[in-house]
Image (cartoon, rainbow over all chains, first blue to last red; front, side, top):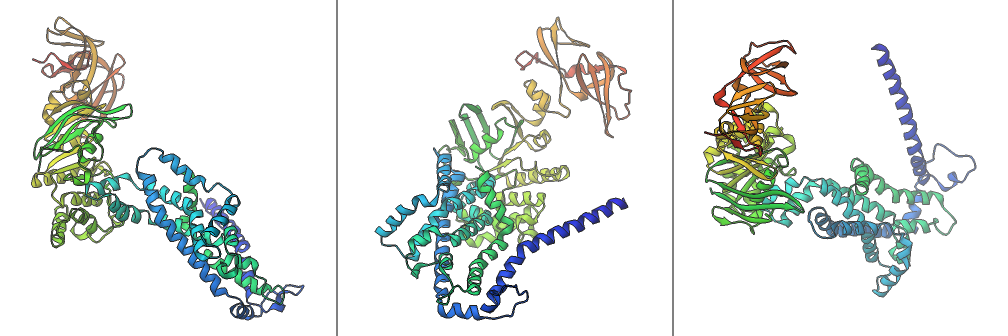
Amino acid sequence: MASIRKSGGDNLLVRYIILVSWTLVCVVPILWFLTIGFRPRTEIIVPEPIYWPTWSLDAWRLLVSDWPIALYLRNSVVAVAGSVVIDLVLAIPAAFALARYEFKGREDIGFYILSTRMMAPAIVAVPIFFLFRNIGLLDSVWALMLIYAAINLSLVTWIIRSYMLDIPKELEDAARTDGAGDLTILWEIMIPACLPGIITAAVIAAIFAINEFLFTLLIASTSKAYTMSVALANFTGGSDGVIYNAIALVSFIAFAPILILVILIQKHLSRGLTMGAVKG
Amino acid sequence: MASILLKNVVKSFGSFVGVQDMNLDVVDEEFLVLLGPSGCGKTTTMRMIAGLEHPTEGEIRIGGALMNDIDARDRDVAMVFQGYALYPNMSIYENIRFPLRMRQVPKAKHDDLIRRAAEMVELGPFLDRKPGALSGGQRQRAALARAIVRQPQVFLMDEPLSNLDAKLRASMRVQIKHMQRELKVTTVYVTHDQIEAMTLADRIVIMNKGVIQQIGTPDDIYSNPANTFVAGFIGSPPMNLIAGTAQNGTFSAAGVKVPCPASLSGNITLGIRPEDCQVGGDNLQGQVYGVEPTGDITYLTVRTANKNIEIKAGREFRAPIDSAIAVGFDTTRLYFFGEDGNRVGVK
């Protein structure tokens, strides 16, 4: 017994060493990156790295005074949040119908919806550009909202559908015999019961939308409609050459919300990602 | 409070026929149990009464009114499900309140009705909890409270006890029966557990492969099984069925010889209940295959001609395996079934 326990202890130690090392591998670059944003510009272009930073808010001041970061952030938030709302409003009833109603071609429609995800976005880039030009929505954050919603709608529908398939049919039968109609069942039973799935889908859609680059670049022809992802790519720090500490800070600002979202829902995230793929 | 009538009801799923030409009359205030193995169509029958499935053919009436085209939500039936089906996001109080809200019962009455229903199933202290914070038995009681709160015309119960452990099942059984008598609501109860059926039912309907095998009181079903299916399904252990031949008033099979009505001849199956056999006698010769003492009774399995016969022997009975044994039958309690499985030779 003693030897078993001892080897168990050894295992634990080995495990901790591996986990701690891996954590460092993952976290240190992020922290290093963050410190760059809070160092003076001169400290990061020296040949020998300086490990302990001299804290400085230079980059932050530069950002706030010279660069419309507030506008870009606002554009990101408006386009992403709006697209997620549109997705949920459309996807929840669609998912309910695909999960619960029996109608001809149900599986085909489900597959078609998913198949829109399989296409390379570049294929539709040109048509979409002309479409939005013709309806006069170029260079507008509303256009981005619509595009993000369209891109993610299939995925959101599919994830919510998978969660709905997991809700026992009995619940719905019970509600029906209790006197509830379809809308009541959707609103009072299904949505609350698969709320984790809806939140997961919303967060995944938000992450994809925040990171969306191609269509944003295409639609936002001037910086008026830039979101963080495109603004970041165009950002060099100003007229004085490439300013790395400002870039690092902007990158971190763009990255932080996603990190926070992922940490908040990490328990559901892997399930959400695999379920849409596996169940059908 | 209403009668239920099923007339020539058929339910098919594609080419598979789930329920075949079913005729059933459930009397007002009756406790009717649908009993059968899984896949026999009992749950489908119940779901058709609830309005969750639509019959392919035939008529369903509740309280005399034709229900075929009436939605589940508009039939005044309450259903209790095997998996409880409590709404997980609502408290027990809200769960019980849900049918009242859906049926536009005046709000002022809600609290009183909910508390009375909860009292009835002894769930008063748990009303604020979510279903997840209750035990299985409490959840099923909450589901019962949700069913009784709006005093429906009909209760439908789909294996409500099968997720509970044996002890809890026994106490819930008594509670359900008591409640049904008190509320006087016509009840249809689906189960595959014959003990539940025997203890709860006013009448039992035994089904197999979508066809009603027999309808009768528990006593009737036990003492006068209509065919080999019913005989082999009811009883624990079930009736022994021995295939053999009848000739000149004697039934014989390998190792078995008993008198039978003189009218019988040809291939006949003999049925004898384990409690109607005793050790010692001259009806069956065989070897002891197994002895299982349980305290109040000893189950003895006798093997004869590649067939095992179950016998309820006295509590003291013990015998070594493979020893020769002679068994006697109570010849006033023999059952004979013809080649089609139906009972024959009834006086």
